[in-house]
Length: 100
Image 1: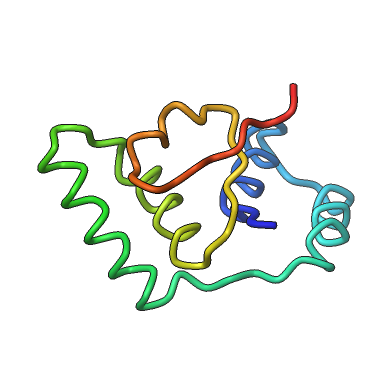
Image 2: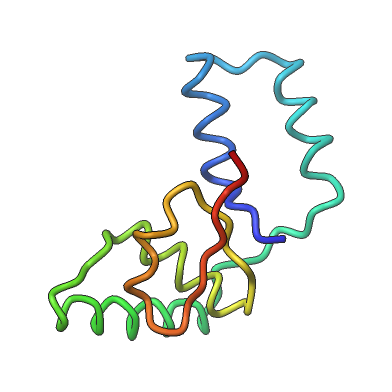
């Protein structure tokens, strides 16, 4: 499972405007069984190639979404998102729709 830790953190902080100790404990327990994968050199190369390709075709999806897609591609991970159409521009990439 590919979980974007930065978005989980952003959502938890943004939703509450502050993060209390209980929220951090819950977040920590959720993340404990998960492996946090680094955005490494391979992911950076995939990002550069992917972004250049999208820009050259006039189909950019935004820097952060490109980073998310490139990280998933580099790790051969599945991406579950509430907006799979945005990622359809990425060749060979099949994002999964988030359950309603």
